Image (cartoon, rainbow over all chains, first blue to last red; front, side, top):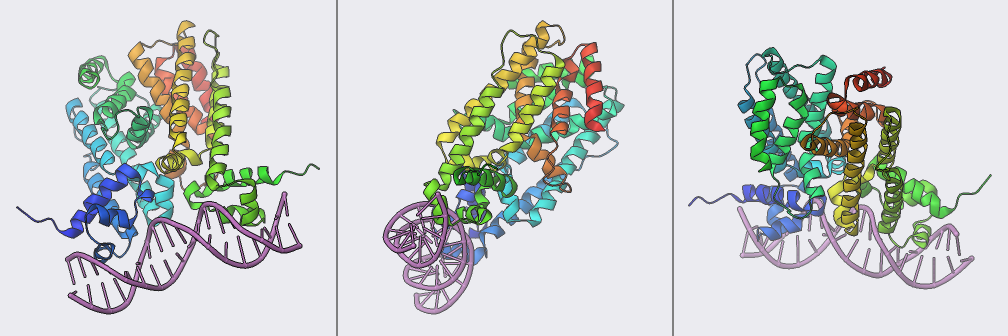
Amino acid sequence: MKKVKTRDRILNASLSLFNSTGEPNVTTLLISDELDISPGNLYYHFKSKGDIVEELFDSYEREMADLLDVPGDADISLDQFSFFLHLLFETVARYRFLYQDLVNVLSRYDQLQTRFRRILNKKTDGFRTLCESFRRQQLMTINDDELQALCQQLTLTACYWSSFDTLSHLDDRNSVDPGRGVYQMMYLMLPYFAEDGQDQIAMMSQDYIG
Amino acid sequence: MKKVKTRDRILNASLSLFNSTGEPNVTTLLISDELDISPGNLYYHFKSKGDIVEELFDSYEREMADLLDVPGDADISLDQFSFFLHLLFETVARYRFLYQDLVNVLSRYDQLQTRFRRILNKKTDGFRTLCESFRRQQLMTINDDELQALCQQLTLTACYWSSFDTLSHLDDRNSVDPGRGVYQMMYLMLPYFAEDGQDQIAMMSQDYIG
DNA sequence: GTCTATATGAAGATAGAC
DNA sequence: GTCTATCTTCATATAGAC
């Protein structure tokens, strides 16, 4: 029975509250209430609410950097790619508070802006590397303009799909299903895949729909 | 030389400030400062900041409803479609403050949530109607699953492209270029168009790239 | 319709005891 | 490390004069 440090409990509770209620709506009082600690105690561990946000952002940045560190010359299989997408969606969903009120959050913590954009570009680059691998393996037929547009579209979708999805189906809240997002990403790429790639994806897609 | 009513000046200035600074960062004091009127005067015209937001939302809702009122049986040309997309992007951009901090805004003005979702669905339906027109005219070949995924993707892109685009290119602020968005939408549909449709789009695309 | 002055209340943050 | 009490700041909103 390991005792979790208060500092980490604060980070976990904050992340969870930020995601469910939106970062601007979460006060330091709410966080300390949730943990049954005093606001003063919270401020002993973090000198400001912004510090909590920044430390969470650090984690996000680190996890994303690890995930997007795609080797340029490897032959990626569709299964590997699907796994990658699942991890990606899971990670974005875990830090979705960043995306939900992006302008507001980035305006109040403004050193984050550059770093956020860097991550965005890293995502696009990652997709490009992956697609180029598919192209080398002749799984994919796509010209450079199309590739550019596709990778941007994949990045956009990776960022906003979760928000968009929960918004359109209000019913089942909190249940962010990463599968639907992965399915949507696959559909974006589908037209550019060679026939056997398309069949494979069609088969994988059954899992998401069912 | 017509004198613009204070009430309307407040609405215009608010919209402009909301878009550039983010709605949560705009205080009633800032709005009245911008117009060189007193805060008291502002509250004479609107009983709360929320009322301003709601009235702006009303306009957005109305404009969108008009725009998305697509006849179900008409034969839409690609030119008409391109024009439609331009109007759509222009309208979304004019009310982009809604999208920039979506969760925050919708949580504070909660009757907006349902209405916002309704507009979203109307967008998807509109795209479906348009694509079905293309399919009837045999400009487009697409099955029902693909159509569903495509229309959702078009809706997502219509909503978030502007934010995404300004975020990835920080350099040229304030200059939201609708053309790039339209181009991106066309690219999404391109794979499903018959050959002469693809040629037409390729030609139109030159305008956006150049 | 517009102003000045002010009330209200909430959130972020600190001080000092235990 | 944790608590209670308190301070500061600032945005929303109101009152009442002009």
